[in-house]
Image (cartoon, helix red, strand yellow):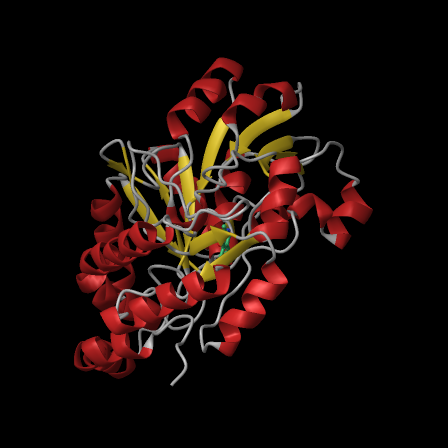
Length: 369
Ligand SMILES: *Cc1c(COP(=O)(O)O)cnc(C)c1O
């Protein structure tokens, strides 16, 4: 039997009765948009992150776009972000009308290298958008300090780190605004597209709420440019059910990742490394990502042993065709390029049993020796 890369089925079976009950309730009510589950979920998300407000929205992409629209980030502005992330990070900056300025990463954590941010600041810079990649929060204190000094906004992309802790606080509650994704494969996922945006700022909350609803202050009265950014009630019902299990799931992911680390860190081969998490934070392990010297060979051999692997991500964002052609980004991002060439993620999900974990570990050891 081959191992799945992500197993959502076991999770569904564990929650099946509750999820079906909640979905049926929405079906019976007919309140498919803005039903009571939306507010219930938002309250729960806000409490869980320690943010004053959470707004459920249609995707992680919208969750990053809406705070930029609300903060007036657009034409003529620059937003500094990492060079190494899923493309939605840079895409939302362009969609807002601004220009992404790419910063290289710290090769140990794969998150933005804060020592390289200040050199990229210009009079046009409006914001910094760090990504908490693979589940580990970026260096938010350093980023917030730079932002404060230069009067910039910080918007954390926590699409991969929902629930992660940083110096006792949660991802999403560490900056003026932050956006996450509930795409099914994310640590906390729904059964379709979804996302949420977080803030503790009253005015920003009000603005983003209006933007989510076509920029309307009241019905058919549009004071802003907005989008249809709502999250369906059914998806909120699914998330309410999944949240009951989420803290346990984070613990399981952490246990599995630590077990992987304890065994795989014994491999001493140049160019091979296990993930590194800084001591003042944890990771929710959206991905368990290795660096390997010969990736194509590694993936092929792992597949032969029945272990699927995935590359997150094979190209840096400034190296993506559309971005190269239309933005002609200047600079070099050597650590991001090295990551794009050598990272590979192993299967990771909270319901993975010990036998499967051992099979994955044994396969990596076999392939690397
Ligand atoms: C998934 C992801 C997004 C986009 O989320 P969607 O819900 O797919 O729109 C943004 N940033 C990062 C880092 C992601 O992993």
